[in-house]
Length: 221
Image (tube, rainbow, N blue to C red):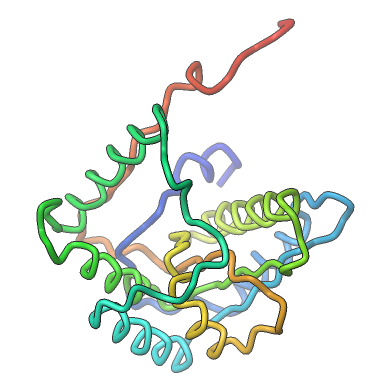
């Protein structure tokens, strides 16, 4: 699979099969991902790979919190700005509508937030979840580095025939995650990434993207 194909085929999958993911494949991916760009070569990320019974227990605990309507732990960073302005608000709304439809959840369903949180807490059935942390002393530049690292990981997963779903939702239950992975003090949970093989008998969601001309300006060429 070439780079263009990996980029084009990567999407947030929200229905995974129970087919196991080999440790060898993950080690290949995470070893190659160490070459991700990092300003000053700080490599500010810390990744924890969770599977098997520890992941099953984490899912049980997180799902129980979601079903109970637990609003989550105090936030260490905002998931989105307090107010989204156009065109960002429009893109967000359109993508949300597509996701709800694909998941079979009506937008007017009063139980929608709880249902969405529950699906997320189950990692959409993924057999592996990667948890990426950033040291609390790091700044915006290092958070950008962590984002590039996670993207590199997701593209390399495609080369292994695997799919993924980045989930900032896990930060809502960061204390539960921290207890599971034994995260060092001073680390901030950036996101989780569910990993596995896609379930074949479910509708495939591919959200639209803004045309390149909306986000790119060529100057001097």
